[in-house]
Length: 175
Image 1 (cartoon, one colour):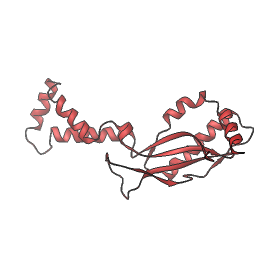
Image 2 (cartoon, helix red, strand yellow):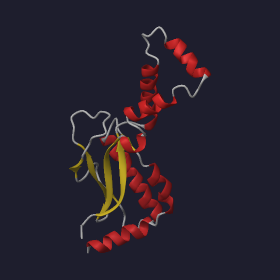
Image 3 (cartoon, helix red, strand yellow):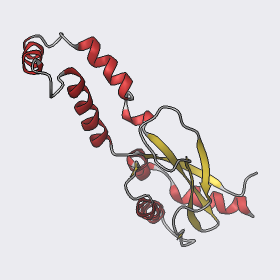
């Protein structure tokens, strides 16, 4: 059995969803209504009057831009685990000098420890452990400047997890 007891994978995105969709909207708008085309205003007015006029082309442009942000803009994962009494996160990411919008990627192991580990007191409560996990992720965000570390799902379920039991079980497995 692995000495690492992974408990959650945190996705890392190239950029936040709001920025991605703003870029997508701008791309679609520029293709449909080119700024240098003298007919763009009339085309925009036609679409305003008939909202179904460009549905098919908008859908095509949505797909060609990259589709939904949530699964297509992932550039890495932080794999959280307990290592003894510490919280650590291994990092897997695309290996490229410049990360741009793409659908072809292979995630590769980058490092055993993305950020400085957080020590968990042996007698820590579930709340203390969960807050330590969130603190560790804040350190990861500092290491991954300009990227979006998405802990939303972890934060949603975290208050309901028995972190104490998970932590103690990982300590028992190690020995």
